[in-house]
Image 1: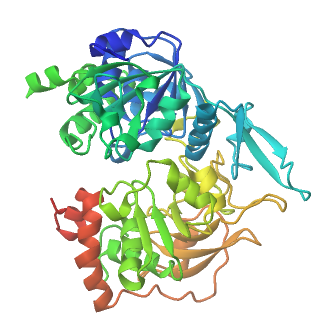
Image 2: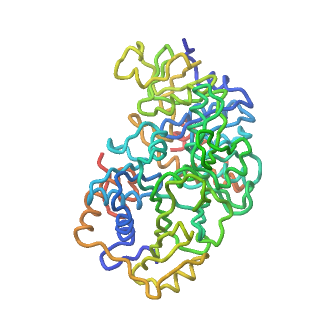
Image 3: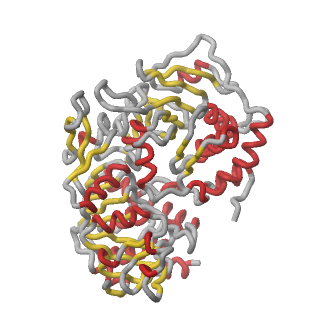
Length: 276
Length: 249
């Protein structure tokens, strides 16, 4: 049975230095990212599944991140991720560059409790030169030459998720976002915010039961309506174009030391509302 | 060449038409994020020839997949015939660089990262490189970082790779055996000299390259009708700016 508590209490469950998994959009855990920034989390090793957007850039901007393991961090149509780009350029954040299916595959190895998993492709990419933990071996099932890359499993210390619905047992309904199940399965612990906490047991609903992160994996849940804002949560709200633009502009200035002090306010609901 | 039109054909419409022409015979075409023109090209091919198209970022039921992983698994099994990649730098061997300019890791300019390229470039038979900006800073002799290699040595299993390159100036085809691009057609009003001047790598070209054909009236009607409305669902701003259409609510 998961604990039902505040977003701040969830953030306190993510220790400094932890290997933290954060999913791509939609349902990016923005409320949790803000709470991690507020508690001044430090030295996080963030693994983006498989890419990072606003949450990861903001965590880097607030100095919470030591290492980012990622297939790419950007603000998508809002441009490059300013704090990520500046921090990598200046060597303030260590980056372990990956490619999307490699992150997924390594997470799948993690959920199986297997030590590694092979993946096609990648050979000849400069990624391999900078990932000594990725090994190339001869396919042992093939007599002819057939080099293939092995990836070590990823087992995050904590998965940090935002979902549409949770129940009081800790079941999380993820809809079609099945990679959220893989992340939770692979992680040692999962904490999650939900747009709403419903009465009853989601596992008893035959339409929803196949798309649950089972409560077995979930340590604590907080209700956080708007928990992905200003990113999108389909079925609840779309991306907040004005807030994203405001972030892209202020974070860009701040990352260059040219003002932009309000970058966190424009993605903090109370301050953003007050500013309007 | 910027936003000007060819008669009543917009630049975007020409590029959509060119991309559609590269997708003959495909059963399943997938389009990644931030790709409204490739997405429109694929949707046009679907209107004309009925293939399956997956547009990432679209929430229409026909584009939904099983979270993020399934698309890569489809590619790994040969269930995806074409995909689109781009690059901050692309070189004459079709190596693409999505990581940044300068020496890795603390690059002078850091871009986003490889995304799925280091895998999809190997697994998708027909990868179309699309980059509107045709300039020597993009088309370099050698990329600063190989996010995904254009060709592989014998012995490395690879069912896919670069097929063509579409830019604001021209269409080039890629020969995997020779690891070289060759100019296939120049868009109307563009000269071979202009392409040479604005390309940092060497490529093959016929003495008198053909001109890229414009879409006919029927094709234009498809682009401005069903394609425009579908692409506006995933790219509302593109739909408004190029076609003046709003996404269906």
